[in-house]
Image 1 (cartoon, rainbow, N blue to C red):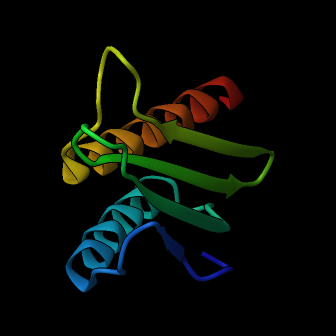
Image 2: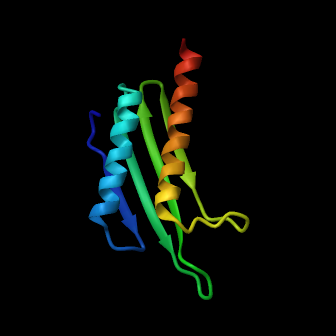
Length: 106
């Protein structure tokens, strides 16, 4: 990546372990698509009265000719309670979109 990975935590304290897992996933994404120039990850915790903590993860990936934005947000039907799963799902979707973009170009 030309621009270092940017990780932002909102509504929660930064976690070194969580940051390390995000870095691992970003490195794996870069191995898959070497032309990534930037990757930004925002992890937000939402606290609602009488409800469990919910998480939102947004990933922005920039590659030549393409900017991918992936968001995994809590919804009424599928509450994102497990942050590791939410992060994994968001990175999996970013990889799928990069793969689709790469296939369209060839």
